[in-house]
Length: 421
Image (tube, rainbow, N blue to C red; front, side):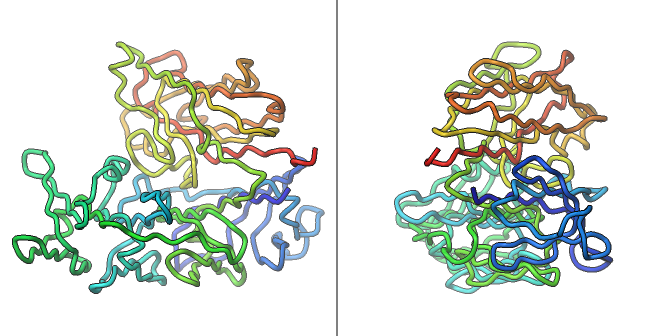
């Protein structure tokens, strides 16, 4: 089974890094190793210990077939709580317009054909309008609501918020976007808007591009919050190289990456499973009083998922109390998932406390586990999925109220048995 799951430490990019971060490696047999990522050669990932030779008594090279995932063994002491930046959402190829790929950075320029986005201090990419679904300047909260705003038929549409809180829109053709303004040619003539006043610019009829076929297929999550499909090409000398839909070669420092998920036919992400039953209710009141419904790959407030100081590549954001039943795919055998309080609760007066339970076909297999300010996350691992039809994830309030109970089930991976078994 070829599968690799990598979560890299959130470190401040650029200057002042004396040595690469350390990572915890979990092999398929459950064995745990710790070391530094140093090289990708062929199908082998090389790790090194402090003396660069051995890894806790083991040779520091691992075949991808032998690795379940790798996670940062330490995180930044002061992780960013809310990732705010200019966002560009890419269109999907084919009939499906909206894709799951998006880039977060800073718009630094553009021309009549596209936008220049600074992804990292050393990486600027040019994004043609025809591969973009929408531009969300200065986007922070409620990303999924901004994703729901429509284009103007055959025209682009720019959405703004009025002083009374309602939304207004202008249709036309986007002429150019630079770091401060957006120019639109509409029916009433040319209009120039400050990006600070724009909620979303939705592109009409984008073409989209398929995911790259070169390199090892991965989903990439950058420290800035970007999430995109790519081909992993190289890892050496502190740099990582990808082939992407938006540029043939994207070279970044390793510390700018939050996580990589190897996408293979024998793995399924928990966040991609179909919910067949969902119940949500508050501590006080009726279900219709529930303020924070669950969200896929976002926290319940619409922010990027960050748990344990790490921006996670995928997950389910929930608030207590939420009960979800998810249908399992055929040949499901093993599940591993991290459950924790979202880092954004650290800025709240009440940081919350939840109790989490995992069940398979109605039988509890992990938990209940209480999480709070002193115990913020737990890893659930079970190999009891064989022959099962569903799993249930329950996040309740831990016996108190639900103030600040923003949690997430993140980095969830289901391994499938080989079709030959």
